Image (cartoon, rainbow, N blue to C red; front, side, top):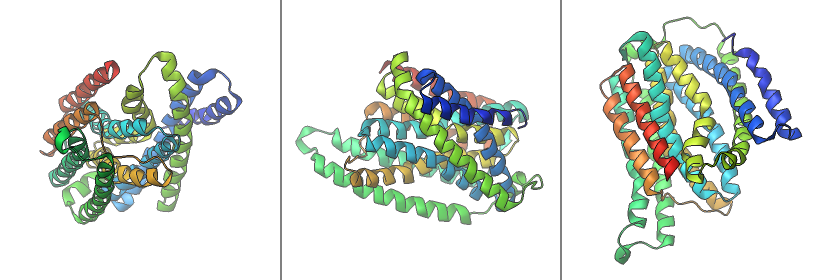
Length: 349
């Protein structure tokens, strides 16, 4: 922690480069991306402290919510500019990234240090079922929109279908949160509470909020530099939306989840990784559907076949890996391998 704190100086450096137009988009991109590392470190430290006080479930929920605040703000800005396809690609990429990159790195590095790691199978089973439900739900509008021409719904009907499903998704997410918080696991609680808090709860929460604000600011600067940098590097819009924006926009959550997994707190790590993906699918996406209507750029839940293939593949392997309550470094490598293969496919799409 002491080694990365001096990197906080990159926060004002990135802002100076952005507002003075010094060094070009590449310099802004690199400075803001590196500035996210110490901010993520602070967020991770605060999350650990809060989790000791209130438990890993609420701690993971808080971390995922604060981390996804940046994603929500970034996508609303993109919607306001009419980049609906990029927003949908970013949604798919965020879910894929949380499942494959965050969970994959967590299991890989945690497994290298601790061997086989354990987490609550009941919570993992609930999360796996919800993830499968989320992916199936996001596939339904596309299945109807891309169906046979003879009985294909109109564009207006697809829009109504998306609006109705958005309401259902938010309702089931609220029910999921209520159920998850009431589901107790003494064994998981004892694993996650191996230590005494070193920061008072109000200070830890304030640190979470402050670091999240920093992450939001740096993420906005970073995303603003992505398009010119991607054009200079010859990357496609689909690749930018699915692979690049979610990867850098959610870097704070990525580091936090890996950090706690390395400390053998897999229930908290799993809660951040899968919980964040579920929140994107079941809450952030429906909210964006509503916001898109308000700002005059309606967004449906019709994803491309490429995006759906990635979502279904990621959800399938996550379900198979997480339901037994155990993880190891090989399973982490498997998740990362699928992400690399999807990245290659989206690069050439």
